[in-house]
Amino acid sequence: MDTRPVHGYRSPSYPTQGILAEHPELLRLVPERWRRNRLVLTGLGIACSLALAGCRMQRAEAAEDGTKTPAMKAAVAPIFEHGGGLGSVGCVVISPPVFLTEEEARAVIVEEAQAAGLALTPGAARPVRIEVSELPPWFGEDPGRPTPRASIQLTPDLATADGGIEVSFVSTDDYTEWPASQVGASSVTTYRTLEVARLASEGLSQAESKEVYGVLYDPCADMADVAARQYGIDGTDAEGVDWSVVMGALDAERLGFLREMGRTADGPGPQGHSQSCRDALAFIDDVKVGAPGGQRWRQLSKDARDRVIDCLGGRGARWDGDVLKQTAEELLREQVRDFVAWLKAEGIV
Image 1 (cartoon, rainbow, N blue to C red):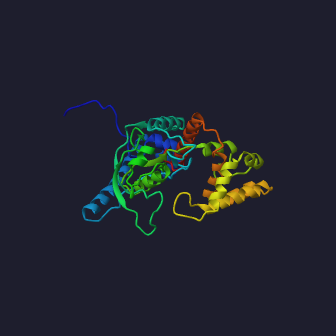
Image 2: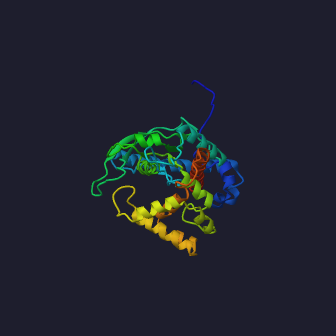
Image 3: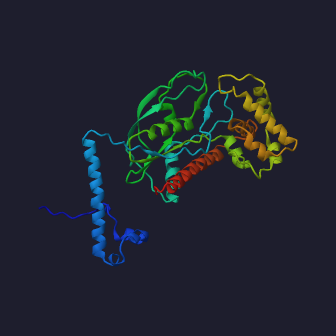
């Protein structure tokens, strides 16, 4: 027999004295005179572990007999939307968004997760092969055409030391590399990181894995995001907003652009949301004559709300790269905080 020192060992699968101390309710099932005897409690724990092992053996034998056991699917957190995850550069883009590099994003995620008690490190994640939907074209999509599927190998950016929790960040580079059903050329480049995050989350949810995954994305922060946070009207809730201040800050040139778009017929392109423009203008006109803004705001579609916010951060707003970078990082931090809160609510951490 070759004896070697043990540098580490796994936690036992039977209930230890420490577990019983933390969960005294388990002892209610044990006779009173047994509870004070350590040897009896240890023997009881071993007996329980052997019984559980027998159950596992029976399951394995059933599998050998040809009975299929259901594969374990990965647990995937919801997408926590903070930031539109949509931005364009080039050509007629006057107020471009600011994008986070993968290095900047990893630093923000690690720092925010650490503050919440979750230690994430790069290089600890394991690659996983998943089936995903290809990215549909930005416009001109045929609604009757089935979305093509593709098989990709995804390697999360960060993970806990044991690899049990893994986090992927969708950057603009990831968007560019994502399988696309149609590739076009234009003087404007549009990045849809939120859409790719949803597709990645969907693919991971079908993967056979015991890991827990979180998918975060580049908020693609623009001046509309800055304006939304400045006036406190981000999201559906807008109670307590001083709408007289908001209306006074609306850019007249942008409002004229909205009115022009609202008069056009709905089309297939990204500028075909004429109804949402008309809804946004109706909301603005109502508020200007004294209608309650908060109640009407909740009734607007998300697209119409985005139009109003876009007015606030539109052509009249001064572009500030430093403020945009801070806004992008804060939006990503909010994603991380929601992810950690979900992990805690699910009892994973």
